[in-house]
Every structure is written in structure tokens, then in C-alpha cells.
Image (tube, rainbow, N blue to C red; front, side, top):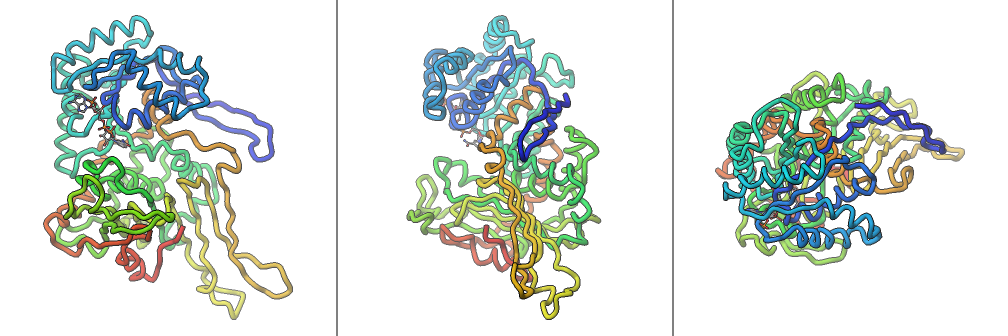
Length: 517
Ligand code: NDP
């Protein structure tokens, strides 16, 4: 990594300290090249990097899928994506970028197809000097991940090694299994051909600017760390709320549900970042080891009874932003009697010195009132009020809110004197919004993560142990739900609300309530 000191003039930003990992020349091979993820995320992210001259010099994309594209027709389909997303892009940029795209059509079940792949790649490598480095991006249905890895392995394109050169890295999208057993089975099938240093498990939340900023805020400042513990923090709320339903992913979602879709990855990653100990260094080993230690401290749930610490809900018809929306069971592609949860709230306790006794309340759901992702750290009430007759409990506790999306920034509430001759206390919010300071929307998380994969930097990718621990924690809940044991009965909530009443009761039992972002 290079340390670059960049001096800028300006009012707010005097200087920037940047840590950069240079990306290496590589072939970027996309399995699932005709799919939704490629269109919506990978192509736009690569184009943005191209526009900012951040792609390596030796670079090309080889798209793989069944759709019978030629190189030319694949480029036309990529061009269609870009024209919609980047209408302002210049013709020169478009044609330069498209010239890097190639296509290899075939069925992932056909070993003969993989056997022809090395020849195709070698011919392209001869034109685009990649040094033989390759990134294989698995954007296929998850059931095919192991098939593709096996096909690549049998064709000699990947082999289990910790040697860095030439690089053969595989990027895997979520979901990583459906429970602990299927995750372990999947992992053992791919580790026949790949070592841990070659597997890049992507959780795009980790590439978000605001999520990375949690680390900066905690570990690049002195003032937070001394109060970041059970002595000063009352509780923490983590919310990831969506206003959308299942959209075009009904088949996937109805099998997965909110617990698998959001908690196994994004929610637990946010929990780990906000609660983990300071890593010795921001590198893959130190940073990920601290996240693992944090997940090891999560108090387990019992398969017999995951309640009352877990609430699961499903939306019914309602109104969001003035539009009428159907209930989950009326959505296209969802079975009429589906028991899949679209909302989960849970209370997590951590068995370690720093957080003993401090609840972490997590909630995530679809068709909620507002789209918002944030972490709110509630500090304890002051121990004594010198402003009698005002009691300590009458003063609002300080709340530090780390805003992840769509608003990006940080806010802190403080009690302050309201101007005037009487002694009146009011709550002020110190608010810092990225868009006010930097004036632009943050780059898409995929840009950062693709660059890191090209640089061989696994820091922002999920490691085996972390993914396994998340399943360790969640599998008893899933088992209890499917067996119908315990108190995890499905609760219904109206679309456009903040979730089922039982989610409110989860906090009310502790004398607390959810923040209304
Ligand atoms: P799609 O169904 O849109 O795309 C699947 C791709 O796989 C298509 O390109 C399809 O191509 C190809 N494919 C399927 N079967 C075969 C086969 N037997 N042989 C060759 N190609 C095949 O899926 P998404 O793009 O939505 O998702 C891809 C992965 O990314 C999934 O694991 C998903 O969970 C994950 N993901 C997706 C997100 C999203 O927003 N879409 C977000 C986060 C994760 P063709 O039909 O041409 O063969």
C-alpha cells in the first residue's frame, strides 16, 4: 500500500491522507454476464473506474453465460446499459471501454466449454498484457457457484495455492448457503480448488463509503474510543429499512427471506464494525480477525426458542409514499401461503468486557416507511442534574447516528441552552452530510470492491470464519422457525409502517423505543 499525502486548498478540507492499493493487470471473467447483477452493478462500476483511469493497463472483460451473444452483440448489450446509466458519456469513452469486452457463450454444466476457456483467455492475454492474472466473478444463480468452480478447476484454470503469481481469484456473491450445513458443504466443494487467499466473498455493504467511515470515525479520532463501551453506551440500534418489495427477485427472496438475505451478511457486518475492538492495522488479517472475535462474542440463540429476542414479520398491503402496494403474498411469483419473513428485529447481547449488558437492537425489512440504513449509538443519561428541578431522565441522551444510506453522514445530538433570559434546555443536532462537504454522491460500493479484488486486497471481503460464525448464530433461529417451535411466529405488518407491533414490544420490554429516522 502507498501512503499518499494530498494537500487541497479549501475551507473544510485542508488535507487528505489516502491509502491506496494499486490494481494489477488482469482478465475479468464474469460468469452470469447476461444477468441482472452484471447489468446493474458490475458494468456501471467498471465503466466509472474506466472513466477515472483506475482500471489497470492490461485489462479486459470476458463475459460468460448461455445467451448466444457474439463479441459484437455482447458489446451492444453493454452499450445499452451504459447509454441508460451514463447518458452524458462521450463516444470516445464508450467505444474505448466497449473494446475491452469479449464473450464466451456456453452452458456451465458442460465441461467441454470450460476446457475451451484457457485457449480463449490465452489468446486475449497475448493482446492485453494481464500477466496471466485472472479474476473470476461468480454472478450466476448460487446453485451454480460450486459447478463453475469445479469446471474451472478441472480445466486447470484454478488450483489451490497461496502463490500470488499469476493470480487466480474468485469473487463470490451472496447468498453463501442457506444455513450452516449448506454453507459448509459449499465451502468444502470450492476449497478443493481454492485456498482462502483466493476467495473473495463480497458483501457490498463493506465497500460503502459510509460503512468504511465507521472505522475512520472510531479509529482515526481520539474522542470516541474512551466512551465506546458499556460504561457510557446505553444501547445501539442498527436499522436497514427498504421501501421496496421483492421486485424482480421473488424466486430468490421467497427461498431466502430477510434473515438470510440481510442478517447473515450486511447486518452482522455492521454489528461487527461498530462493536469490534481496534485492529492493530487496517489489513485483511488484523481487521477481519477482530470482526471474527466480535461475532464469537454474540450470545447464542436456542433452536428450541429463539424468542422473545427475535421478531419475524411479513408485510400486508398498504401505502408507501402515496402509492398503494400489494401484500407480500400477493406479489408476482410469491406463493399465496408463503411463510417467508420480510422483516426481522432482534436483540443481540455480546459476552465480552466492552459490551457486557449493552443491547444491540437490529431490524431490517422490506416495504417499511422510509428507505434508511443507519447505526444509532445511544449514550447513557447523565448521572446527576445540576439544573434542578430538571431531572437527568428529562434530558435527552446523546445519540450518535452513523448514516449509511440514502443520506450519508454523521449526526450527534447534544443538550444545549436555548437563547433567552430563562434557563431552558433544548436538543441540538450536529449534522455532517457528505453531500454538503464533498458535493457528490459517493461512488458505488462495487467500484471500491472490484478495485480491491484487482489489487489482491481481501480486507473488505468476508472471510470464511466470519461467514461461518454468522451462520452459527442464525441457524438455530431458522431451525426453530421451520420446526414451528418457540415463539418466532410470523407477525404481519402493514406496508408503509415500521414493522410489526412485536418489534416495538421487543424494545418496550427494556424500557426503550426504536428511533424514527
Ligand atoms: P440473474 O438470474 O439475472 O443472472 C444469472 C446469470 O447466470 C445470467 O447471466 C444467466 O445467463 C447465467 N446462467 C444461469 N444458468 C446458467 C447456466 N446453466 N449456464 C450458463 N449461464 C447460466 O441473476 P442476478 O444477476 O440477479 O444474480 C446473480 C448472483 O448475484 C446471484 O447469486 C445473486 O444472489 C447475487 N446477487 C444479485 C444481486 C442483484 O441485485 N441482482 C444483489 C446481490 C447478489 P443466461 O440466461 O444467458 O444463461
